[in-house]
Image (cartoon, rainbow, N blue to C red):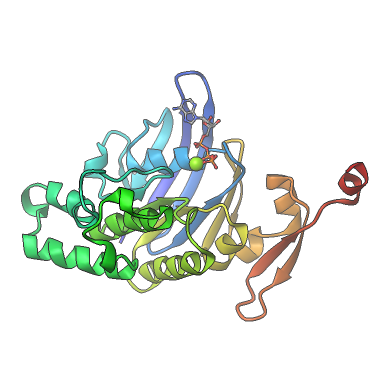
Length: 265
Ligand SMILES: Nc1ncnc2c1ncn2[C@@H]1O[C@H](COP(=O)(O)OP(=O)(O)OP(=O)(O)O)[C@@H](O)[C@H]1O
Ligand SMILES: [Mg+2]
């Protein structure tokens, strides 16, 4: 059970870049929140500050009401898959999956048999059972990506951050993964923050959709409220028609090239 709050959070990198500006955002317990926005708008920076991998320049980040600005990543109980994660090349998939669990100290430390169960379960969920004995270089890009996600799921943290977890996956696997993550939120009370590039998948699976641009939230709410032609134009400079998925009713965008652009081509 985890609730996250960003209160007036600004990130200014050493070179002066303001990656995130005065961000106010609440992620409710058990919510599946998806961040979208053009490249460079501050999505990864926001997740990395929450995970403790970047300092907060101004403002506060709270997890369950406690300010975590000065807590090291290991003390935050956050599972995160980064945009460009690397596996340990000399270890098998199985050892990569269990690595984080084997590093835990003190009371948090699980027995070898508990670790083995968690690894087996996570590998099954992500379709990696046949690949456990392989080294990362023997995996495809999509299998490696599933491995990163399995590593995070094996940790069983209540807060999970995934930065573009679907980039290298087939559409069918993307959909299966998002359905799995949504079950983790809705049936198991985990709180999830994802960055996704695919706007239609974001709208189909998010409970809470946040559109960012230039380090700021432009609009935040349910996909039906946020996913409008006007907002897609405003945030992405994208011309698109909005249709409804006949089964779920969730909004779907169909981009088109504007008449002016077509005339110029
Ligand atoms: N270590 C850094 N030092 C300086 N500037 C940085 C650093 N990391 C990121 N930035 C800048 O901060 C801004 C936000 O970057 P961020 O990685 O958060 O964007 P993003 O929304 O995740 O983009 P993408 O969709 O391309 O992954 C960009 O202008 C980027 O160049
Ligand atoms: Mg990013």
